Length: 190
Image: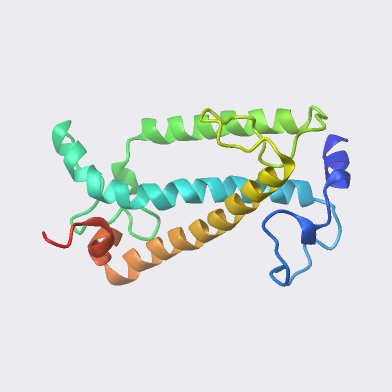
């Protein structure tokens, strides 16, 4: 079984990129053995990447949705107080069904590609390595690669917390992130 082989090749969880001295956090002991560690790291990388995209895209959607909707003669997706549609705020029905189908199809294609890549037995494969780097930003040396992986995990974890905060803040305070934190998104002289 390739997954068992991948798990066996994984280093100890306390030595993975993104875990520094005295920062290891696993109160339930999920990583006490390597069973499932490869899968958990793959899942964490995917969630980190999605959260980083969401953290950048959330305020951009609030800023640009009304402008783009007007330009294309469409109804805005954000609500009257500039909140993005989500499970707590509602409004998900405003998003076209074709969009959801396209997003799910794209996600499924990436997932199938990743699963196939992980099951090839490639010695150079590690969780999250889809070999897609169109800008050539991924370092060539091993130390640089481990540093980049650690930065991706740390920033992704922060992004997961940020997006959770966006959702909670919009729900509790009843206005959009851009409105609440306008000093980040709008010039101070306006």
